Image (cartoon, rainbow, N blue to C red; front, side, top):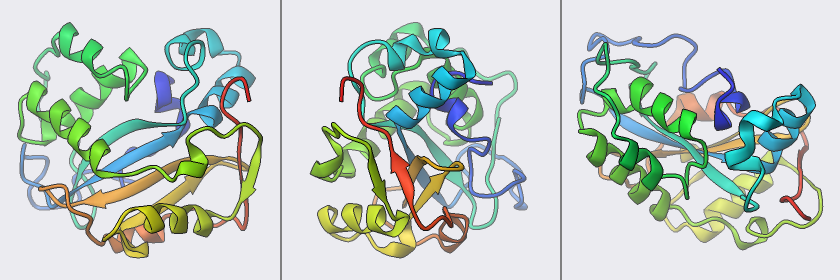
Length: 220
């Protein structure tokens, strides 16, 4: 479902199958979070190539975004829960609009609540407040905040840049994902109280390319 940064990646968790745990998607019963930050220029270029740029206007047609929040995903040590309440409680429109500065795609926000937020054990307001706190806990390296020209970079160098500006973050707590050529996302593991923590399974599933491209921000 190509809504907002959902088009970035087919996977919205660490493992390829969900609920690989005896707790079987019980709300609030998980081990840690993954904060997924997607590189918005890559998403917008891919949307334009697919001819779906018009559906991505909220993210791609206004202000130039750098990293935006894809989601905050409850995880098991192996696998992840999803859709923990069916039907999910309806998300208040006012909560959705309050998040557009960090998650600039209405469809994405609704989907993240249904698929991941319902597994957090929190109400909608609490879940999205936690997303905002998680995002505030991670500093974006300054060289990525106003990228005016295309940048070719090793995934490991992206990780190192985040580690340099985030005390306590280690290589075992961060992973970079990519598509065929472009940077897709930076994923960071956080404890339930939003402290950096290791997650070896996430690290093993990172981008294996030697180099990736970071398209410039719109107008660059």
